[in-house]
Length: 113
Image (cartoon, rainbow, N blue to C red; front, side, top):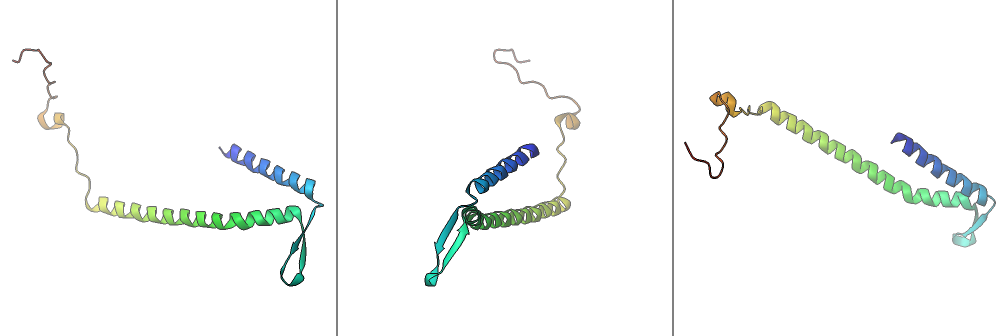
């Protein structure tokens, strides 16, 4: 599984590198307030816009994972405390109580003794 993850990131990096090499000399003019014009490289602008959209969702996902881990850890601690106070009762089998195995139920049509 780790190999596939590394392969995915290498392919994604290759795509980004190919995009930067192919469009590296493209310039984009962005008009800002007050008549200002910003001159950006197209690959830089695309990467910045991607990160601006991706990073907030990544932070939200990591925060949710952290909160769930904390919640699970708290529940596991509470469960361990409950098990320590009330140990589970032993479930004795029929053989341990009576000393013999239970008789099989009679089949339909068989004579009863």
